[in-house]
Amino acid sequence: MSVVTVPSSLLDLIGEVAGVELLAWDMQDEPGRRADIEVVVAPNWRTPWLKRLDELPALRAVQLGSAGYEHALPFLPEGVALANAVGVHDTATAELALALVLASQRDLPEHVRAQQERTWSPPGEHRSLADASVLVVGYGGIGRALAARLQACEAQVSAVARTAKPGDGLVEQVHAMTDLSALLPAAQIVVLCTPLTDQTRGLLDATALAQLPDDALVVNVSRGPVLDTDALLAECASGRLRAALDVTDPEPLPAQHPLWSTPGVLISPHTGGNTTAFAPRMARYVRSQLTAYAGQGNLLHTVAGPPAGAAT
Figure 1 (spheres, helix red, strand yellow):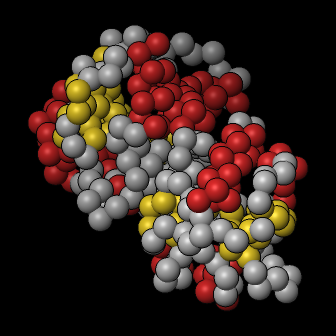
Figure 2 (cartoon, one colour):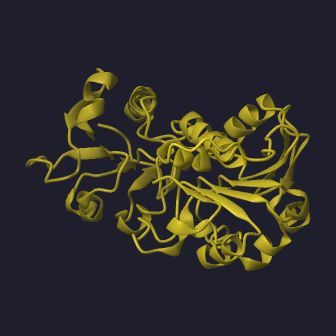
């Protein structure tokens, strides 16, 4: 029987898995005196014990609660497999991306400020999402979920991924990342949904941002370093571009950082996947992952390390 730790909030939701002994552990303190833990399911937040995984002698695999995994790579022991939470956050993150787009297009922050001041001052014509040209950069699960929602809002959606692909009913064609610079000049809204890798770090830098048309909106729901903060700040401070950011670089954003007070910038504190949908969806995903592990000794959807060894 394989010994697996899971966050306490998921233990009851996961239920029994044949061939697996489940233990509750939130990775905030030592996991008791168990030396036979084979798989650790990490909570959906950074924990002190990520950097101490090499103290678990029987560890074979780590299952993250996040889609992003770059934060765990420096602490992954040699020979241990790492899997991310594929599909778990797609809907919630797409929801937030759409909310950020709509809030920015319809000037909702200005309306909130006016309400606080008890001021009735209808502005001029609002920007619309309908008929706007939206470029989704990163066309995995989150990108596709967002494209479906954008289509429902009657936006004109195009997409970029690492390599070119045929259309899928949501977009006519998925362009290769090498085509990004040619697509930016026509994009009124750009939404970043890519993972953070060596290839995507600084993807939207000063040169790329300069290619966007005036008044374009940049939305980031991926990772902060995908976007050049200083370059974005300069563009937004000048009034040429706008931004809606769920992730920042640095993060958390320091209280004195100028992004907080830059006109045209909307910030949410990395809340894309933190919704009521997370726990039940993560529990279903973990159950399927552990079923695979118990049956064949491997977690599915590994992103680093070798496949886990045979379950006992």
